[in-house]
Length: 250
Length: 323
Image (cartoon, rainbow over all chains, first blue to last red; front, side, top):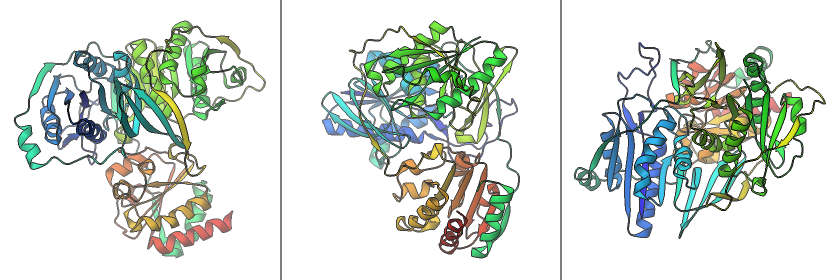
């Protein structure tokens, strides 16, 4: 069974944000790039399905610039079999453009399962998974926190406001993964060595015309400075007074 | 220039995010000059005419047995059909679990860009611009829409619902839409309510979050007691979720939930950048930490330096007395 995992390279979540001189992008200086944390759960689940079935192939696909092979190499070291880098110089292509580029490449692969993280922690769009499913005409469940494969059906669970929702998803399907689905493995030394010999095929990403246009990127307005109301339990009366009379939140 | 709003319902009741979206739609429609149309995916027209009170001129009803549950594939076909039928230039819905699942599918069917989880809109020269957080709120982007209709989901609890026009009724019209309900799709087979009837973190007015300073999962009892006294929902830092002390659904921060309650109480949380990103848009922040140099105090409106095992139970007691 062939599975595809779509991954994205993103700035580390510990990144302190600086806006570049153009006023529209992130200043890349000093920013380290990582595999999108939600994609780790996607990679792990695909590998578990392959292990459960005892056969199959896991193909990692990523849209992005020259740095992307580093991230794809990590995914190969975790255990994916091969990778496709859809190369583009466009910084921050919009989700529909990415979904279209992915759909073109994934359609002929006839994957039974396509995995993506529920969202990328840079643009926080949470769109590519369900867009890709719609373009491919495949069943889709998003924000999956529990997964069981029973033959040609996936039984999944997702978090909704105030509870959980269970779904039955017939294969072939597109699933997006939430934290809590599994504990992603670390690449082993053996995995890292093996990854060096695995193929990363480079193809141009066919993004088409943009569907969203970023006109500005700004830092959030700074919070007005707060104060220490006191130490220990002695501070409680002053705290409650401030919350009631000043902040008016109690 | 008409605006279309997807009316999210649960168990037959209109969800607050839908009234918020109608409120913003009414404000934008006043500038753009056009009516607000609502689209509902339901099994009956119960309660829909009353959406007139929230500013909808008419409601397109996509009626289908499947819509007793959330059914994104069918709803996407219906909402896309409603966008075409109403000639909408702007399509809005809440960035709830339903809206996040549905909106990208509608955008893909219409072949247009979607701005997720927006916190503001501007109209300049007849064009709509959306403002939205990126990197869990470390920065905000302003985006334009080259195609039409523009599509956006609205962050819950940011926009105010439309003022209620008491007794005003919307015309409810059936919506024709093409959807092959026999084609394979994901189907909801059941739902489980959370253990408590507390609002979800993203919808809470007050949140009390605990971090590593609690020293162990059993000590979250004091967080829960304070939360009970305040009528709050419990949150957690990434450190304690990764340690398995709390479920992932409780996590606030860049790989958890972004929240903006009226009051956020951070207990024993030092304030890693990824956590601050997820909560610094809260209206009022209180930090309780024994380390006076903890970064959390830089974003807190009010800080208490001290041993949380003494401060929190005493605070709980004091709050109980107030109420």
